[in-house]
Amino acid sequence: MQNIKTIGVIGAGTMGSSIAQHFIMKGLRVILVDAKDEFLEKGRKAIQNSLNEAVERKLLKKEDQDKISNSVSYTTKKETLSACEFIVEAIYEDLQIKKSLFKELETIVTPHCVLATNTSSFLISDIVSELKNRKQVLGVHYFYPAAKNKLVEIISTFHTQDGLGKEVLDFYTKIDKTPILVQDSPGFAINRFFVPWLNEACRLYEEGYGSVSFIDDIAKTIFGISMGPFALMNATGVPIALHAASGLANKLGSFYQPALILKEQVSLNKPWDLKSANILKGGKNNPEIVEKRLFSVCFRIASQLVSEGVTDEISVDLGARVGLRWPKGPFALMNEKPEYK
Image 1 (tube, rainbow, N blue to C red):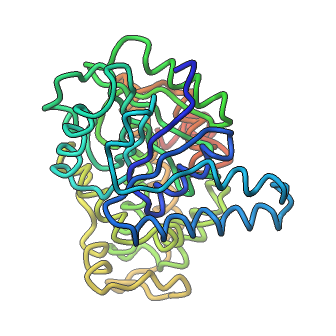
Image 2 (tube, one colour; image 1 turned 180 degrees about the vertical axis):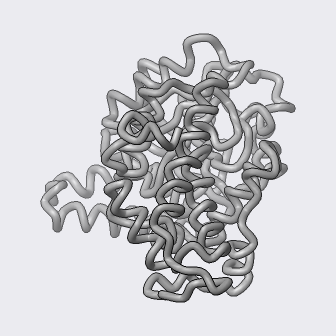
């Protein structure tokens, strides 16, 4: 990982183009691959628009823009990835498609090329289960927006070569990311507690303990954040919250099952009404219950994942601060609110 010059990024969608943009802005050359030219053109425009914005905000000099733009090449031919030392997959979340892609990549790249997946839904070990060389494969889970959000979870599996995770962590540190080391586990570290936190907000609404606007306001106040759970789901897409919760439930059991109201909202194909004061089941706004349950679900799951050895307390809190932009992580909050442990 010391002499990386060319990086492959597979998938020119929102996440893939943003990942590619970060690499080229750090002086690296990128080969961006997608199945169709129209997808590549959309990715190219996204990168160009973001670079234009960086120039307007004086984060990038105009004279450097062309050089950076020319550091990425766009192609539908995966064979060109044979020149890469590091490849990040950022395609659609479909397990079989990802497995097939990595099996194909294994026939293209050199044995020393490091392969990484940006999956948020699947275990890394499931994606690489049919590969011949699983030592050179791991997860690099970015957080939205990938070009700006500094957090990256570096996820090793039982098969990952000893020390590779640390090498990848050092690489990302040098290119101005804030990586944390995580073991392969459902939801990895941050989404393991963050997604149930979103889901718990839905349950509170479903059970009549507060309106959407009330629950968001309470969450913002007690966690010191600028957006509540419903606003956050709207920002990233309500179906994504449902998909993530369902994935955790499939691996971890019934506690993680998505709330019925979340499923209903997705079926309506609408965002949450953030101004709604409607309270279901004839209930009333209950700040004590909302506070207790939002803290408790966060603390319980953060403690559980650390006890399982997924990562440590410091990494959990760092990930929450950097990736979620929480002023304090679960363990710092736990020390202030021991009654909710």
